[in-house]
Image 1 (cartoon, helix red, strand yellow):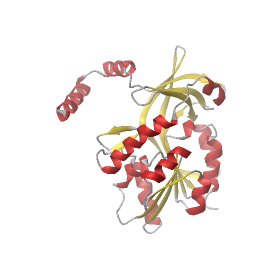
Image 2 (cartoon, rainbow, N blue to C red):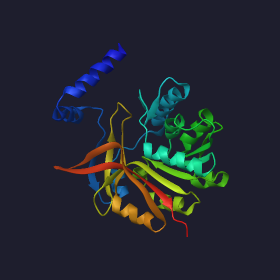
Image 3 (cartoon, helix red, strand yellow):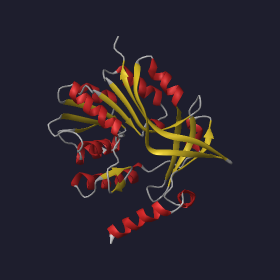
Image 4 (cartoon, rainbow, N blue to C red):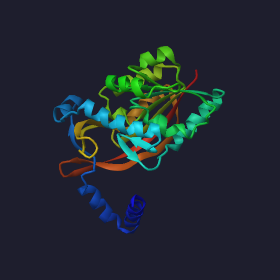
Length: 282
């Protein structure tokens, strides 16, 4: 029955006009919304409900355990999917780095939840690879990670500094996290000051303006009900931040595609993108 329902959904999606699909998406309670324009992170936070970390952690943990046990193929933001949606530029870089390091690879995954990107990439990487995937996360996520998901390959840390004291990452990954950081520039500076050869930004919303646009993200209850500050990043400003120390190896469209911020009667467009930066050797 489940297979027939999936086939029916695919058939409907293929035959319905795009305008009808867009209307459905706008009316759907599944839709994540971005709204407003705020002068500061604090102003956006004041207009947000915040979120219950315990509730989100429970949802994410349940989904991640299903992936770990093989009951599900892929998890993102606590939502399970029936196929893995790979970020091939990231995979290409991981393979390149493992060749450069003679079969060794260490990744620092900042904001990596309970290992979502690790489980996403793992099946694509060679079994013989000497891999260390280090997740830096919020305290409760790290505690859960250490309790249920820690392995010889997957590790959890409370801070970048704690991770760097034990491992020397070749790649630092920011996947769908910079937009949720009030101090994103400071975190990037720490990454730039490290010995990591590559810095990867993935699934991050960019806006074609000179400055970042701070709004509020509204998450529906079907995922986990919450609203919190979110920054649509200025691509030009971010590139200037990197260009003194790095070369841009790749600039690619990322999972999430295009979207709009609701600002009064205006619709401000943004696009999810990724970047791969390589440290410049002096």
